[in-house]
Image 1 (tube, rainbow, N blue to C red):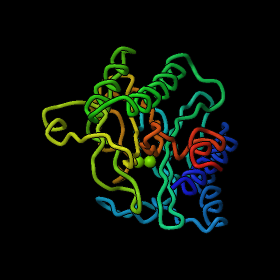
Image 2: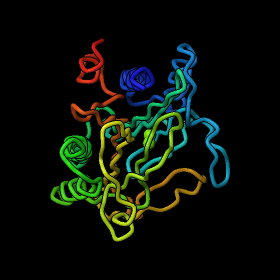
Image 3: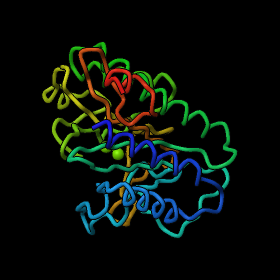
Image 4: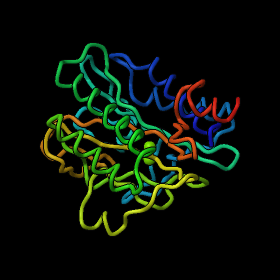
Length: 254
Ligand code: MG
Ligand code: MG
């Protein structure tokens, strides 16, 4: 799974280099698609079945008040936007999935703070993942962190198990409710999750963006999305979609 994770990390480095005012989101998608193709990796998003249409691209690109599942198009990034890019691939039969929200040029303070809170939420989740008995403890830590920063956690979308398929059980919520407690699960070495808090600056409610895919915040507030594929080992959590040379490579002895 590290091989898939590294390709997804590299795809994000391509995205990061491309992001600037004036680039069309479709161009970013095309470059990621070529990259996966070059490496013989299967993109996991293109053709994914949806309510109206299969997803048409290898990345989801969601701007500002768009939470997730934005469709790459001719729309151009503008200075001050924040842009969430999510992508995944499979290689050697195993999947990797990761999302990150980036700043486009100089962004205003509220947007900068959202980027900080989103990354902080993911870091909080991964460190708790290594120190908790049950997922609900991690989920509680994520929502407490987001709320302490004056933000809210999206509840209608969740993370997931990941392995040979991108979406495997269990569902991995970023909040705690009666229902999530019923479906709570223990954290044991061998478990691999796509941990992906989606955090809104305003209310947690989201709505359909109208194209069959894009999800937007109900109150038009900013939203961020940070995701890593994370394996729980006997030595703690390992981020499979992180940069080369991080804890997982040491652990694998490569
Ligand atoms: Mg993803
Ligand atoms: Mg995911």
